[in-house]
Image 1: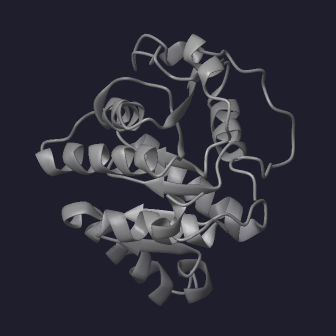
Image 2 (image 1 turned 120 degrees about the vertical axis):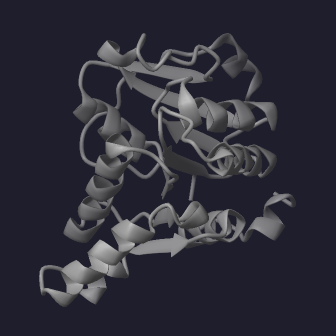
Image 3 (image 1 turned 135 degrees about the vertical axis):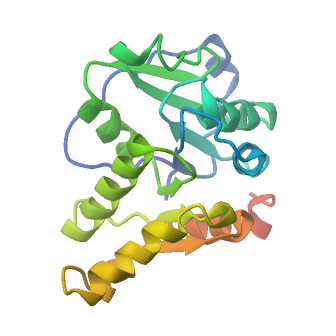
Length: 219
């Protein structure tokens, strides 16, 4: 598949291109949408893993699609992707341009009017989704993307990085929901949970239909 080209229903907003985009003539090898916090968190491991994720995407010739901010883990993953030579697409609502410090270094920075437009465009531009530690915004994006997959709006892999057990309590509640009969194992099977960021990224890229990570460098 061509990275970031499988679409949901609806049109695509025109991009706001950074000048460096002209220097990038080739398509990225894959496109991953990363959901994460606009705060860094109290545990340094959260920022460290965000940086590792960004470096991995860039070093493997990938594209990061994310919320377009420079604050917190959002800025960390974007800066790391750029530093490693990856392509970055940021999508941010106009009302958050100042609050989340819109990242002007993105190859494309889309300023949209609503949160719905933001999430739709992020989903359209991605081949797979990955949630890192974050707050209610990250939770909402992750759950909506998971729900969209269950309903058949997309068939793209969805991953949850459980760094340092951050999502242990949420996962326990989800298992409780299954036990109470409000969810099923089929739904749980639609997401991939892992505490190993490297293994999870490789699995998501492979599940999206792209070469295994150790073969990407040969493309």
